[in-house]
Image (cartoon, rainbow, N blue to C red; front, side, top):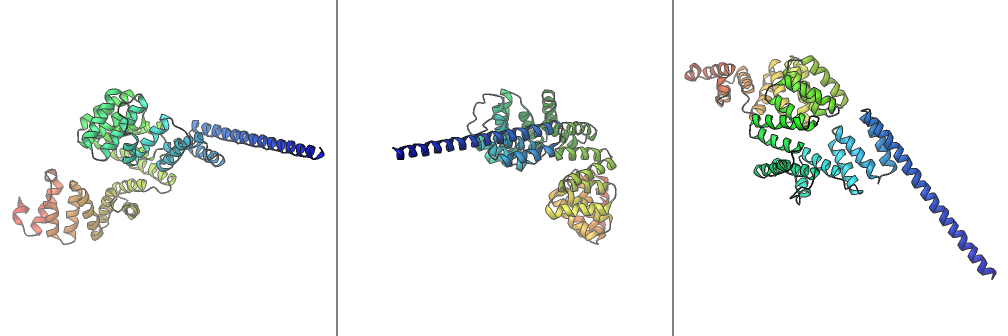
Length: 397
């Protein structure tokens, strides 16, 4: 009997220990969740105040404390998306989905990021079965499928897909997708009409507004573009491309000092973004600060040897500094990439003349398009090159 009682006591003790352990685990889990909830609350407050950096710090703490918390992952992905860190945003949102967040919002944002990253195949795979959209979220996903098709060069399919989505329900993605196709087809009027309609329906959508601003810049309307990008900075203050658009508009308006100040600040904030340096080089060139223009252009070209803007800046600034061989090399590469730029072709011809290469200059300038032939400075250099190379008839034409 005594042996039986001892066995029973051991069993009760083991059971009590197990219950205590489970209770402790439960308390630990509750405390951990409470800690995570407190951190998420802090992160949300920082977001409301526009302090994205502090929000990222808090959300990283939450993810470190609870790696499998889907809400923390989703919020961190949202913040990364708002500050333009697409790679990190995609990673966190995909992880949130893997952890059980099957919301349309997460699915849509992942597709948006993939389109912006020009990673089109996953978009097509994810929307393969999306024949008949049942709600707004699915219409937007179908429109992103159209954007992916356009990105892959399947223009007719893209048009059909976007038109179908737009007929079901006009959404920001249908306006953007169709406007991009219109711009590709050089139908600026159609693009303008689409984007104006899109803005009337979605006045605060940053993507519609940004594409409209880019269209205004392409149409050489920097004054209105400056207004659009200034408003965008208020709506989406942490998107670098918006600040660059505003700087480009100010350059177009001749506001070089203001543009340079903003680009210097962006350079500091982004720890030397090459996109910022590329545009800052343009400002330096326009203000005849040729040494700075050369320096920034070289930094960009060291990483991206085919960057057209940097090539032109390097060529033009080198010409101004009478470094003609370097100017010829950069301008030749630029003209090969952008053959329709008559100003660059003129400068390349002038450079070849300064190097004592009239035959090369004549060849460079003889490749002019009809647009080039209406450019007075082009005709002057072309005539001089032809005469120096011995072709008097072309020179006197």
